[in-house]
Length: 164
Image 1 (cartoon, helix red, strand yellow):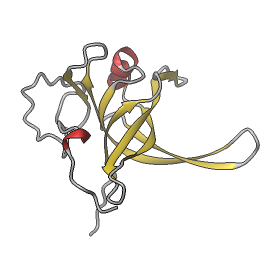
Image 2 (cartoon, one colour):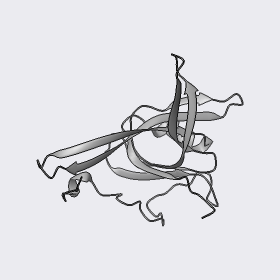
Image 3 (cartoon, one colour):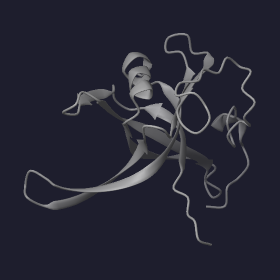
Image 4 (cartoon, one colour):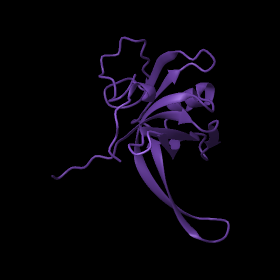
């Protein structure tokens, strides 16, 4: 195969309020973290187990950055589409480090707010950029895209035993 794909889809909860920085020419760079939690029931003990992964998210898209700055807060449930980018840096002790971020680029990426903080209802405000779509599209429930696998299901609804 001659092509390749670098696409990440996450549904999770925001771990910290978005931090907004600006480039020299004034373009916003928004960053925050998202936690995704996998739950299963241990076959041997019957005990429910969880594993949480933390993902660094960086938004270079001006429209999505504005949405994140205004509406995304710690605890907000979000749906993200972006790509992985690994960067190298030197920490304060002089050690060379690598970090991998989920990046929403200027013309690619999507951010959907899945709940309204305080009301607890599933909203579905969708903001995306790229391709033939407008740079900021809103979904008001009439979205024709298929729902992501597992969307709308809760971990409590799945009681089958997972073999690991």
